[in-house]
Image 1 (cartoon, rainbow, N blue to C red):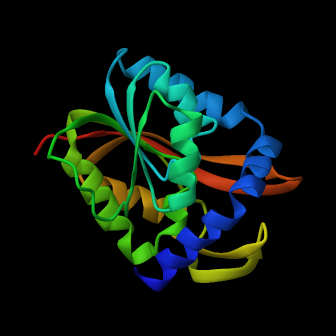
Image 2: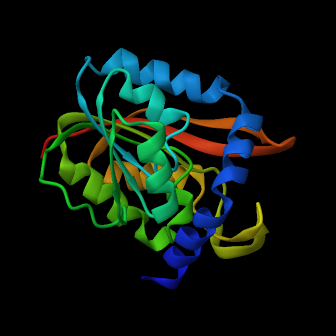
Length: 210
């Protein structure tokens, strides 16, 4: 496994409980905004792929009430916990840069706070793979970086080393468009992680048929 991805996998194996506490501290206001967008776009029973699903709480659990959800997660421990927490969904351990799914096999793909753990030179590969597995007109909702930050490792993030990497919002939008998506909205959303303000760039887009 690539060293950066091993840091992420091992890190989330160790900090899964602290991460749940972090998510709880952030609240659901921003997440609910985008869950509402998804529900307004997708019919009940649609096939949805979630990249970097973590333990499945709270987003996968909410999505699985309406959709056929497949969660992809790099941390083995989090896959085990997700299967326990959200038995209605399916979970696979894997790398979002290489999706082992058939072309045009999903109606939507979502990824919340996850692609910033992938080396940014591979973000285009992630988006291209998502485009491949979505059906024409398929929905993409993704949380990306809001500022420019080259590959870096935070030595103690919730109790373990963690890798981060992302571009600024404008560059992210250009990548999404280049991958073959038409952007419906792109917004910086501010949240508080245990009292510390953080900003992510949320993009909603649809696959353009080629």
